[in-house]
Image (cartoon, rainbow, N blue to C red; front, side):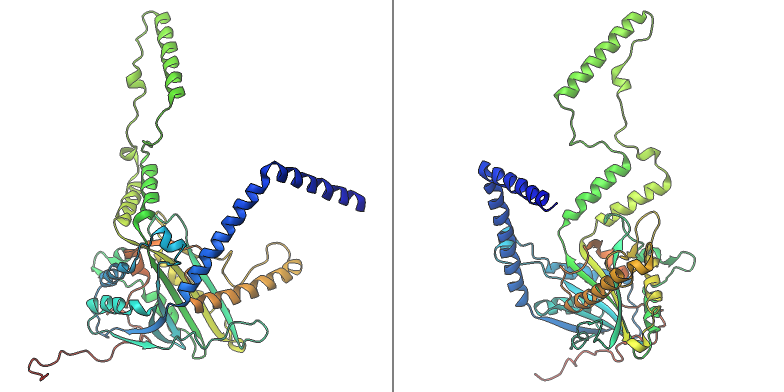
Length: 436
């Protein structure tokens, strides 16, 4: 048996030697140079990223806030100007990368705070965008609340952890249910989609922390190309890029000739009209159901707005002896209100990021593997939540500014969650005759 294994390795080495002698070393050289290039690029990007100074901001809006969610959409539109549009050389050689920011809604023992985490050089941009819509807001720099949370260790950490990330149910081009569809038609009152999230956060016990992290990176309009292709597919339009080639032309000509011979042989039979037989409508829009037309209209409206790469992450922390397994249930359920069966929706990524795993076949056999992956996921979710690096976690999805404002905005005046921290005083203008 041992001799057979040695013979197998000998055959393998002979094949490698033959491949190498026939110029295979060139392929190895190309792969090696490519890997070195990737490592060089990652090194440069890390060097540049480590020089970025990040700050944590607390944002409080007045109690009698009368702004609509459209104000939040305008905030996202203004902050989108942080998009840099670096060239290939700047990204791959100089290590520059598009910056991002996070908005966070966190409940500390039931006290809800609205936070932002942003590069210091973009602080003025974020504050200007918020003050433009909420002149009486109070924004102040605070210490990062995750700074003193130690990295999770299954054996030594004093706290228990649960977390997950969200993903879309369909392609990015399909929009979620946005705030414009949360209005009662009869009373014309908008139901704040944030109300359910705030109520879930308000149920947190004094010793617990429950947070929702929204990461946004402004992007170019390239993502809209897939959306336009999807619209053509739903409409049943022909792909103009796929023109018939020479062989197809010859084939269709032969078929027409055979059809003509068959017609002559039939005698009095009515001649075929190839032009009529081959005609197909430019699209099937006329034959679509009303619901299908509404879906296409919603996608077209979504593509009309600028977008962000987006990640949504949830986390729950509590002392191990007081850890509640169902504390996150209401918060996860609150995100179901953004679902639209004919369009899109958000769902937790239970396969890769959810920090609990259910057995699939037989628990005693699977338990060692489940325990290992659960501990690994818990350490990873804490690290990702603390670092807030956009490259960490699952692949981002695209939200336009209307969708961004739907999932994150400041509560409307009709939201009665008393635990939300709000600005108690208004800012007043200085007297005109104030001496300088």
